[in-house]
Image (tube, helix red, strand yellow):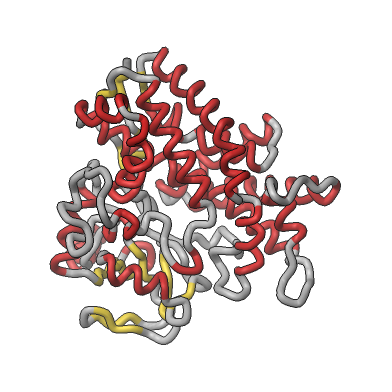
Length: 400
């Protein structure tokens, strides 16, 4: 009886995020939805809508008056988490937090941290090559952003290890919908955020370089300091958000390169292609499908009525392969004339605050992956993430 009910529910819904996926499965599903059901409904995670066309997703992202992040900003959601600016707030409440984060991510800071990122990337890749490969996510693409964030936050070695291992456990628990572990690991990250704030209250660092110090100096529109609980939530948000997407994105890049030796060789021969290649990879393998909004007043899209407060997942990964925007969207093409139309970092007031640092880190990681290898090949099947990300959480490679 229970199984028949589950099957009936699966048959009734337009999109099943719990279905088994292989590497190209999500993109085949998204292409089908764009063609026949661009506003899809799913019964999973308490029910949600999913937009798959570029035009619709961009319109929602840029319409802050019509759509809010304060009700649901990700699918699936978790009741174990508290309010975490800036993502959980709309303007103008979120603006002081964004200004503070942006202050500590200026162009000079990003360029200062680039050599540190490259040094970490080369050490990780050389160790990876020395062992002949393995799971790129576990050994390279997961620790790399943690090490980059450790420098940005001026973490000591125990804090760096705690951040990486806890973030890994948090992501794996989220993938398994293990609510108990999500709550426990989330609280560990909150504790780390509280410790960092307490430490900076004792001794501020340069707010042009350190995000916690920048947040402690920030003020709201009335000139008051930002509330303690919101500061903790904001630091906790920053600590996690930058560690989730890069591992699966770089896993996707590695899988793609393993299947295209000619592209490997071309990119190895010409380092100037790294920047446009990274941008095309970002379009092709955008690692998000679960960022969400809710309509403030209700909306009808493509004949489907969405009530106020109902979660609307925005499939960035689908938007960036929309045939209406990108010619031959499933192919890798260097120097696409409209590459800046991709939505890998979102749009509007909640566009990714760490976009500049993320781009630089990913460019470095791809360059190092190619520099430190002569060949990249698959050594097994990748294992895919579930919502809200899309991409491999396990990418077994054989490298020389």
